[in-house]
Length: 215
Image 1 (cartoon, rainbow, N blue to C red):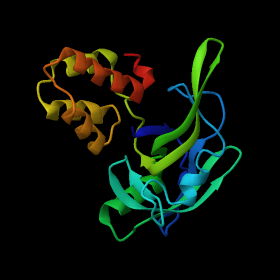
Image 2: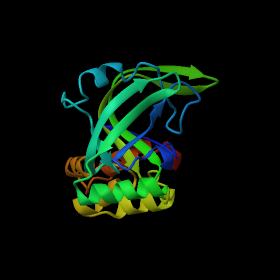
Image 3: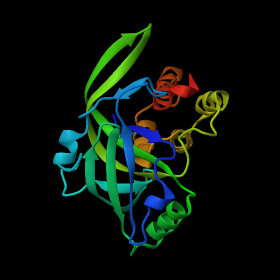
């Protein structure tokens, strides 16, 4: 299943150039674990970068908020600290120019990426099970305007899902907690909303999407 990770403030305004390029860290390597109890291991991106990501294309796309294409990644480097990348925004596209303006002004600084887990290992330390991500397949990466779920409360998510009667309502709830439009539609279309057990499965997906909700 497609997953997401987001870093806060890893695109610096001074690293955004007039020609539409920007650079920054997409992911960090090693500990400490993140809020999902994950650690990305060094080398997790080596293969996916080499073959052009999940789509096996000449480049890995740059998306904003995981929803709209704004350009492509043109350079990568797996450094000791993490995965560094350089992207080229398509300045011929009006909404992409808007994103460039937000980045250059420092109004948008988060970096996020979506991925499939190809290899993982669970290691328990001090009674906490940590998932080590050893090999990932990139879908896309790019800037985000705020962290997933920053305004979402536990009670509201539970209440909204329990009371949802249409697939469209469930799609909106899932988008609000960070799933892409496509993933939200897929999840909503594959559950029987009249079955309380299946609604609980949707809650589990939400919990995995952002473990900080502790649903």
